[in-house]
Length: 334
Ligand SMILES: Nc1ncnc2c1ncn2[C@@H]1O[C@H](COP(=O)(O)OP(=O)(O)OP(=O)(O)O)[C@@H](O)[C@H]1O
Ligand SMILES: [Mg+2]
Image (cartoon, rainbow, N blue to C red):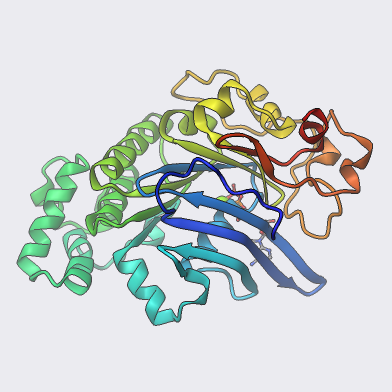
């Protein structure tokens, strides 16, 4: 889409550049659009938060990048990783990128850990296959990493099977596994929702800390604006499969410009609380997918709606250096 204004302040060459990314699903009654023309850049080492209510398309963005869409799904647009379009890679090429340069942490660690293999061997496998380490060296690296993610008595526990770990520990194992190969990019999808709230913050802080140490850029998908405020450099607010607003985290929280972002922040009682309740109390029902809509997907719930909001699609455009917003109100004010 030629009308998307790129961020002007991006200093380094982006590590990841999503350009008009779409995800469509084929259904018996026709096609649905889950991700509708998302364009975002991520610099090396940067932490980008993607927030939005359930069904806004957050997970599908990550699945599209990793080649993990459901069989009735199809991605369009471009997802350039170090200049190479992930959407155009063969399965074998994608496998190499997934093993070496990009890692993903899923919501439920049991779906990604093999229940029949000792944790240490799961950790070692990637290093043997992708980095050519000997089994002994790879295992030693694995144990070191378990220690770094603060698994007590790491050398002994490494020999256990995943079900012998608590939920919080399994999530740490996932983080260890994801960062062991020192990937350039980590995609984390609600990585702690399965955990006790008191453990969530610790695990996320640890992920961000290790990410900083390894120079890994992170895309962190979450419902939780408190997490974003604490850990992210930049935030994209998604609604109905489209980016409503994108800004540096501080700027977004200080002066949210889009009515949807303002609604999300108003629905969030206290930002400084480490145990921030989840968002989602804006009146009305969240919309899934913005495709086929002539106007703004948020128009039906927006208290500041203008006449043309339901008929004309607002374009995501720069409102200040390093900020973009897709809203007719903001267009009208400038
Ligand atoms: N296989 C599929 N077929 C049809 N629609 C799908 C399929 N998978 C996902 N969708 C739709 O895509 C939209 C976006 O889903 P997605 O999983 O990205 O939401 P999300 O923002 O991650 O939500 P949550 O916060 O609940 O995880 C939803 O409307 C969902 O119903
Ligand atoms: Mg999701």
